Image (cartoon, rainbow, N blue to C red):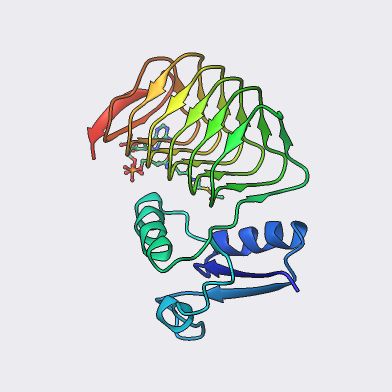
Length: 197
Ligand SMILES: CC(=O)SCCNC(=O)CCNC(=O)[C@H](O)C(C)(C)COP(=O)(O)OP(=O)(O)OC[C@H]1O[C@@H](n2cnc3c(N)ncnc32)[C@H](O)[C@@H]1OP(=O)(O)O
């Protein structure tokens, strides 16, 4: 029987569980360090023969837990929903979750423990770095680089060739038409930098 731990029993974790079932996992075990009704990572850390997927939307927490589970010898499951459309030239690293109806076009590179949320479109030759979250209905045009730990808010879009810096936050519905620096909150149409994080 295909078994999987999902680290984080959140709403996001429920969606990850649906994708895991779609990928043929039959026994899904939630673990959570903050909820009494679930085993903690400490409880299961000796059973590293079962892979882990993250049910955690927060990029910084996901990055920290990634280091922790790797140190204990776990493999990260990469979950790709069967409805997604992905070019054969795309490279996706471990621990990434690709949700329903995502499109990823030619030569894009997707890093570790990334979330490509429902119906997002990643056009050709994009680079999505580790621990990024691309929210539902985001559209990234060709040759866009999203640096590590950045969250692109729901329904926003980025025009071709731009870079959004690391650990930044792009608000819902933003239209990004200029590069965005590291550690910045930005939103609006056109998207403007509003605050340092
Ligand atoms: C499956 C899932 O659920 S995935 C998760 C998807 N969720 C997201 O993408 C959420 C993205 N987050 C946002 O868009 C947030 O509004 C943020 C982070 C941009 C701003 O949050 P905060 O800093 O808390 O801003 P706050 O809510 O206090 O609003 C400050 C001002 O900015 C405005 N504002 C906030 N967000 C936006 C936005 N996305 N676009 C335009 N204006 C905005 C507010 O209307 C407010 O204006 P006012 O001062 O004139 O009243």
